[in-house]
Amino acid sequence: MDCPKCNALMEPVSYGGSNTTIDRCTQCHGLWFDLDEAERMRGEWMSELVDNGDVAVGKVNNKITDCDCPRCGKKMDHVKDAEQPHIGYEACTEHGMYFDAGEFTDYKYDTLLEKIIRLLRR
Image (tube, rainbow, N blue to C red; front, side, top):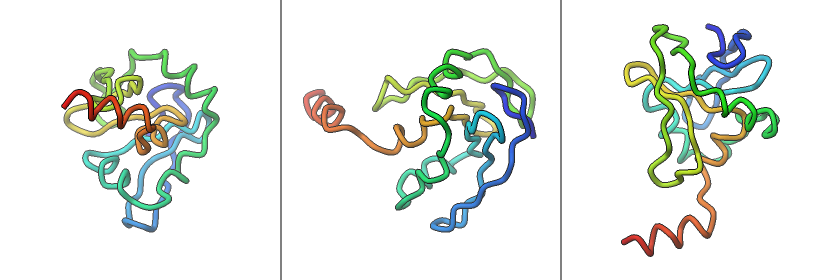
């Protein structure tokens, strides 16, 4: 499988906590999660260690929003996370989601400000 952002080879990376294997780009270190894997790993202790790419490279690649699903080749949607709208990732409704380097770690952790804003909205 090739990276939807930089077209480099994706390699399987296992996380022992949930026995989950995801795909990480060998060049830009973006992460591909099959359906439900990101949510499952979001709650796992130390799962952010799979997100070992350069955040600066991730921010540059985040500007690329026109990319194809690495599984089916269809255009993916650029999605803003409902709880953390500053996070934008690419998603294929049939196969999964792609996070640029650093985005999964951000997705996993709410800042204090984000928690306060969410409380105020309720």
